Image 1 (cartoon, rainbow, N blue to C red):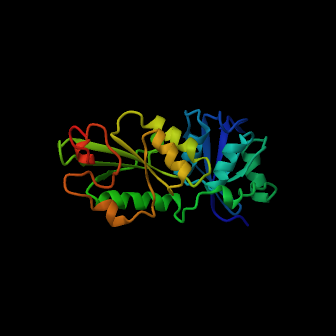
Image 2 (tube, rainbow, N blue to C red; image 1 turned 135 degrees about the horizontal axis):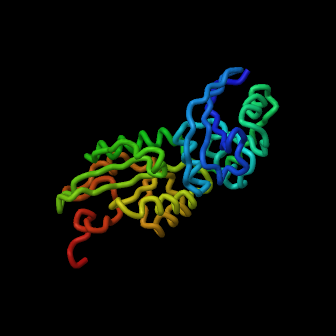
Image 3 (cartoon, rainbow, N blue to C red; image 1 turned 120 degrees about the vertical axis):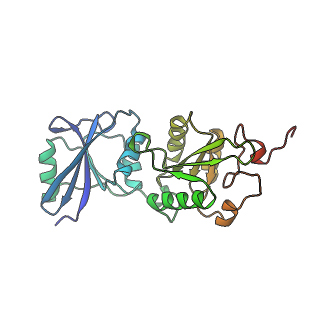
Length: 256
């Protein structure tokens, strides 16, 4: 008997949509044993496959049933903890019937060598991040929601020098080996509206270099908590990088 799980199916009418990357909506179904309950239909106007991965993570999906899917997106989903059953060409109800009967099998997880070495889950990273910024004096705002699901945390604080608000967008890694794509899309999604951008992830060399190219600061959950929180007077806490327009609060003096 199947354990309780949240299942997502890209939908086109009554059928499983031909492509994961092109479907305009996902049907979310809770399946437990022989029972299934349709939870909701989630619209997805974004064309980027990786943003769809983040959308499924946002909704706590355990299993994706789809027809066509690019190998990179399939592997990214599996590495993020979402099982995938691909090449399903049927109606949605038939797909669910076959799932319950046991005739559908999920893909095997990628090699452990392809995954980031982080002991915390995505949910734990988000909780850790919110706690760090709150302890440092930031106002941690509610999650922006599914329309901006590349941003896991928004934190704001008054600049200790100019007294203007500093807004920080934070993305917590999804534990995939395609972090460079996530970093690029995070940059694009937060190009305006934020003073600083932070990527919470193990500080591996390639990740640090990618973030540097996009002006994103990396915070490794292994960093010393107290050093992140307790910054010098007149300095923006947590952030190490220079924040444009707030150079003095970033430790840069005039004429330096």
